[in-house]
Image (cartoon, rainbow, N blue to C red; front, side):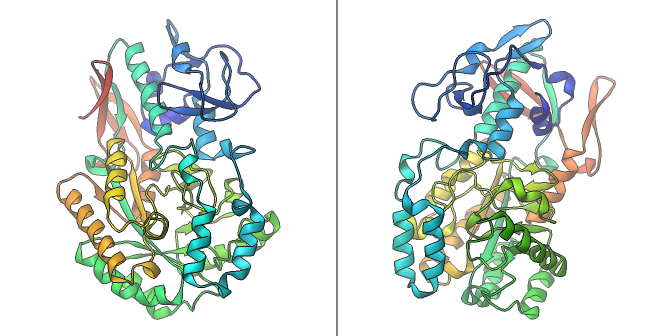
Length: 445
C-alpha cells in the first residue's frame, strides 16, 4: 500500500511506514483524507458515500501512530489508482441525453453539415451543467498530490520529525514543468502551422504538433520535415478524429493497428485521442511511449472525469502526461474568455504542487487575431516564468524521457548523506521533506 507513495517521491522504502489497519469493506465510494482531499475507494472504518457531495467520512481521523508505523483505514494505492484510471466514473455521475453516446454519434454524423456557430451552440448545451459537478475539483484537481503530501507529513511525524529524503520531481532542481502542444484538426490549421512555429520560436519555446493521419487533411511531407528540422515534435492525433475511436472495443482494436503503424512511419513517440475520448483499460494496445489524452478535470470536455493529478504517471508501460489546463477551444468558445487569467490561476496552482502545466492550443482556433493575441500573452507569461527559474519549458518527449529515468532512480546511503543512482542521475537532485509547524516544507540538498 506504499507503492504509489514511493513511486511519487522516489524515497527509500524505509520512510514509507504506512500499513492497513483492519479489513477493507466491499463497498466503494467517496470519503475524505483531510479536509480537502476527496478519495474514492473502500475503508475499514466508517462508511463511504455514493456521491462526492454531502457529509463524507474523514479517514485522517482514523490514522494512528504505532510502534510498527502509521496505521491507515484505507489503501492509498487503491485510491490513487482509482483516480489515475478514472474508476470513480464507472456507474457514477449524472448523464443527460446530450452527454450520451447516441448524442455523440448523431453529432459526428451531422457535423459536416453544421456551421461553426451551430456546433459551438450544441457544445455549450451539452456542457451546460459543468458548474454543478462536485468532483473532480475545477479548474484544477490535486487530490493525488494531497493524498501523497498528507501521507508524507504523517511519515515525517512517525519518524520523530526526522527529514525524509526523496528525489526531486524535475531535472536540475526546476520547481515545475510546462509543455505546449498543438492539435491540428483541419487543413486550415495544418496550413497555419508554419506561422505558429514562428510565434512559438519568437519566445524560445518548442512545442509538439499532433497530426491526424487519415481523412481530415493530407499529411504533407514538406510540413513534417519542416516541423522536425526546426526542433519541434510530431505525435499522432487519433486516426481520423470522428469521435468513434473508443465507441466499441472492436472498433478500437481494428483502428489501433493503423494508429500504431502511423506512429512508426512518423517516428512519433506520443499519442493523443480526438476530443480526449479514452478508455484506459485498452491502452496496452497502443505502441507509444507516452499519451496525452487524460485531463486533470474534464468538466468542459465531452467525456467527463479526470485523473485528479498534475503529475505524470504510468498506465502500464505508457507514461501519461495529463492535460492540466483548460483547452483554448473551451476558453474561447465555452467560457467566452480572451484573457489568460484562468490559465495563470491554473499555472499558479500547478506550480504550488510542483506539477506539469500542459497546454492544448489548436492552430485552427488561433488564426483569428484576438485568439492569437491571447496565446501570445500566454507564451510571454511562460517565458517570464522560465527566465525567473520557476518552470522548465520542455517538449513532451523530454518530459517522458526524464520521468522514465526518474522512475528508475533510487536513493542510497553514502555515509551520513544520500546519493542518487540510476539513469540521468547527474540531472537529478536530492531533496528533503520536513515539518514547519503543522505544515510540510521541501528543500533541495
